[in-house]
Image (cartoon, rainbow, N blue to C red; front, side):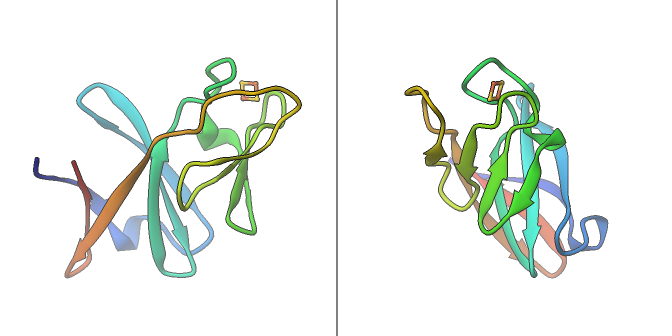
Length: 102
Ligand code: FES
């Protein structure tokens, strides 16, 4: 267990997201009105990068086939078939640094 520095708050303005890597895995950091969230970047349907997806009302929509995940907890919100939730991570902030807690 520990925490990993994944960026600085200045790098991601409100309403934006960016992709980073943790232990070789792509993770998406999202700034929702100054609250930060982190989820796996890889869609559980067919592996698209959610970094290309659209953010709206706590949900990120996969650009490939439209799966909708709640980016605050990783839960699948909408898709025609059953697919896995996306992993979400706990974020902590120190000064303006963003950490993911593992
Ligand atoms: S790859 Fe994301 S919905 Fe198909």
